[in-house]
Length: 466
Image 1 (tube, rainbow, N blue to C red):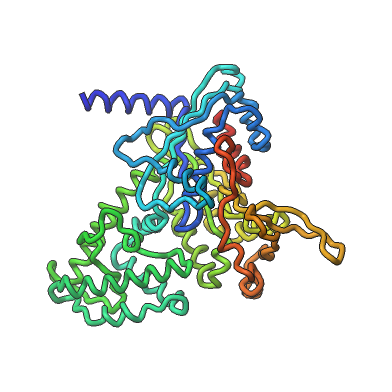
Image 2 (image 1 turned 60 degrees about the vertical axis):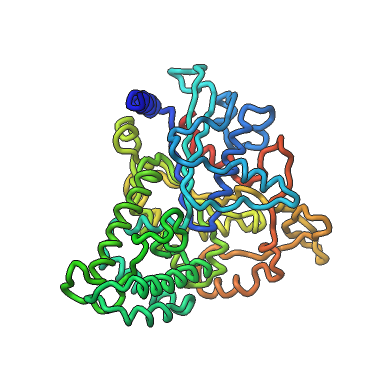
């Protein structure tokens, strides 16, 4: 019976893909980049599809009105074995008093959306149609593990050795390196001492993460999920002199085997579940956080995305690809949390984003996929308004809905990265620390989540599908 049901489900899924009735969107973002907020906002906005005057709130989602959208909502999940994205909990946080940001997720989850509309293509004009949208959620800490798919243990170790040189001034690794020097690569495994060194290495990774660095490997070390305490997480990069030939039960050989098990049984499985069948991708980057972290953080994020995106399958999407070899045909690079700056700074942020991901975009476009850039705020915490200064000049400022809180100007962002621009930004941006205290704007349950530029994102992702 179960086999028969699985065959029926597979056939239905294949039919949806063949008829272009299903789209799988991957939201690729590092930890704290705003991925959970974006999924929450997308689900909430879609849930209001079909309501009167929604087009006024989404003026640049042109296809919405043209397609005579009648319904949007959460559908039954395709894979019942995967946890559901905690949408209700996220909305409860937004409706609390005072409003709170949704909690970041710590495991893989999925949510499926359904749209109902009239086809506006000439061959099927007026036909009632449905489109399903699958969104996978995952911890940002696990994302970077995809870079391990093509790295041997020696190459992984070399990559960490290079990383130490780059970030030593930001996150000192001396504790775990000193402890690791006492390990005998050709000797037997001392599980107790190895666990101690792994713990020190994990502590260093957490420091790297807290300082805003992106290249934190392996990601499951800082967020292990159900693997906490498992032997597959008990290994280190060997940054010291290579020991040469080792016995199969030696420390070096055991750590190499554990790394290979981690890469094949954990990372590759994660890739198959979350990323191998993506049709379209949103790459979200917190540019403000990258600037705050200094030169090392900024360059680290830039290098990371260049390496990371090489692990996705880009190109033109045909019916054959959709069935047997899915390709990502459209990618949006989005600078998140842009309600932290005034509207007249958005163009600078867009230019900065382009300069940050220029190499990564080259990887995507070389394979034949389309790219777009966007500044975005999935859940707004401010309104932008114009005030007149004592000098008579006008200036844009940000305003929260907290009673008694005065409008403020956080500062400017550079349009390109230079050392001088970085130093100026760190010295003068948000000197009062207002941005660290922001919370979501209040809104009513019958209203969509306050957002910025989500209509542009929806038009790019879905416009040609409706």
